[in-house]
Figure (cartoon, rainbow, N blue to C red):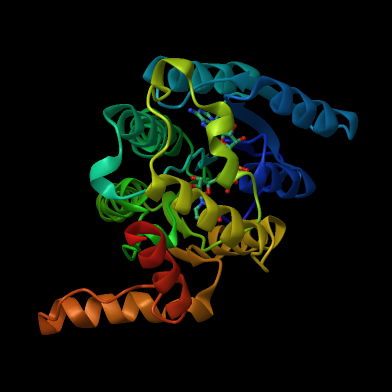
Length: 300
Ligand SMILES: NC(=O)c1ccc[n+]([C@@H]2O[C@H](COP(=O)([O-])OP(=O)(O)OC[C@H]3O[C@@H](n4cnc5c(N)ncnc54)[C@H](O)[C@@H]3O)[C@@H](O)[C@H]2O)c1
């Protein structure tokens, strides 16, 4: 996509972290914005801040795991602004711990938001964009799905999140292939951040009560939460920098967007192991103390 001015962006998870930065930077480029988020107070505050600066923006409380909510976002975007050019399927949540200890509710919550949220976005917005492209030769559309480096490697005590993000990688590479068969006007990118300070390590703040666990967290789940708190809050690349990289990638029609391109060693090692039929290595092998701490916690 080359032109942003006057065009319409839909951002899920738009009230915090990357989503909020996509909104700020989209606004600076002259875009009209549709923000969807499950956290009403943060959403209201974000939308009010944008409108106070004269940005045409609407906010919808939507749970992306519910197809009818994502459809309502699309309907509202069309009603307010007539078309959709840029979609960020970005809302996401995290849960950790030894993979066999995650409850059915953990799986339903994380896959519901991280995977089904993106599926709903792709299924609902892509046809709208293709119809707009068929009507108007100047139309440009772009879909950005937020996966993670956890979609490229499989670190321990992150299994449930890894599964959801690998699926987003598969979905988005498939989307790329399929779009290339039918259009030159609608493109897509895959955002794979490493640890970046946002609210992701506190995503349980928006966990629906119907999907809350009855049992207290296990030792591995507490250890995973502590690791996530530390890794996310000490991240050195900001959400604003990641949003800028993402807009640059949209402009250049680049598919893979990495927040930490210098940290791709574990991805290379994973694929080398696959090709050589070696057993999987530890993606955090560069920080052996992490593994030692985990072993001590889990066996101690
Ligand atoms: N920050 C990181 O280190 C990191 C790394 C890799 C991937 N990611 C991914 O980035 C994306 C954005 O997360 P973030 O880091 O900005 O975290 P964040 O918590 O700051 O923002 C996520 C937003 O999604 C919203 N949300 C949660 N559940 C929702 C639902 N069911 N429906 C609609 N909105 C919902 C939250 O309310 C929040 O506003 C997620 O997909 C996350 O998995 C983050």
